Amino acid sequence: MEQVHVYYSGRVQGVGFRFTVQDSAERLGVCGWVSNLSDGRVEVLAQGEKDKLDQLLKEIEDHFSRYIQQAQVRWSQITQTLKGFEVKY
Image (cartoon, rainbow, N blue to C red):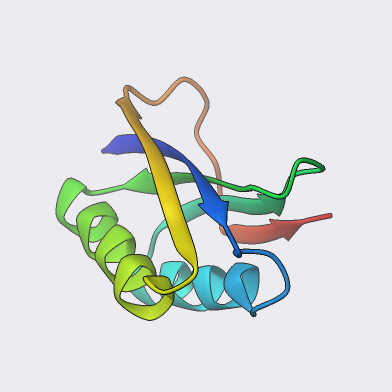
């Protein structure tokens, strides 16, 4: 199990980004959360098997490539185990 923490910038708020990420994560069996930030970015923290996390990031990129200007991706060890995948408000 691994963890990936991503900050997406661009026109990523208000295009169904959070709910699409949640749908993909749940379908892939990935745990974590997604949240809009006050500076216009979207933050994603996801935990799961490396291939599932890679697939999640690929699906996000494929679906929102025209909206994403930059993705800051940081892989790390899991510090706290999460359950389910939620949209944080």
